[in-house]
Length: 224
Image 1 (cartoon, helix red, strand yellow):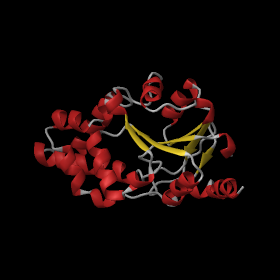
Image 2: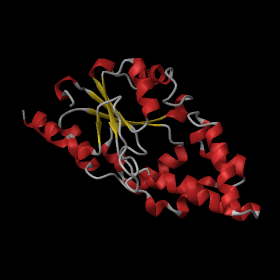
Image 3: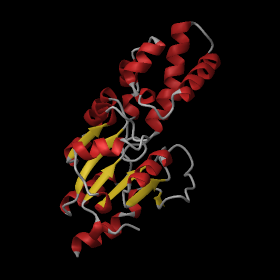
């Protein structure tokens, strides 16, 4: 599935790829509506309907991922609310072994995330994954989300990589399409970003349920 001999750099998404998307889904679809309903004195169902519409209005933009934006818009301390349910933050199975094998094989491991800096900091503190990465690039620092094709040029200036010798792993099809347009040679989709949901079907890109599927070939490449 992956031609490891032709990969120097591995770009990795965070939420839904390295980390279980259950935290984010629960936070935005359950916890925030509950706290918003309490703050506004409205019914939970009404809060859900209002928030889902507001989420949809800016989905795929940098503000959609921005903690400060939603704090201003909703009148809630989103960073604090995330801490209330941070126990739900979890690393996907086999991620740490995958990252360690990449390091042993001499592959550059770069986290490339749309998550806001405050979310990123909380999740790294909670999981310790930063110790297994060579660099972490936050889209908010570059001023564009990964869905924007111009994002990749900005990433290239921050952390040079050869698109023809790069593997990019993400659970977002929109982001994978953006990376494909830029010319990243090897793309891999995650079929089970949220372990509490059913695995998706993806025909557009090579795809795996989780990282256990790529470990045998990576071990073989390392041994060879």
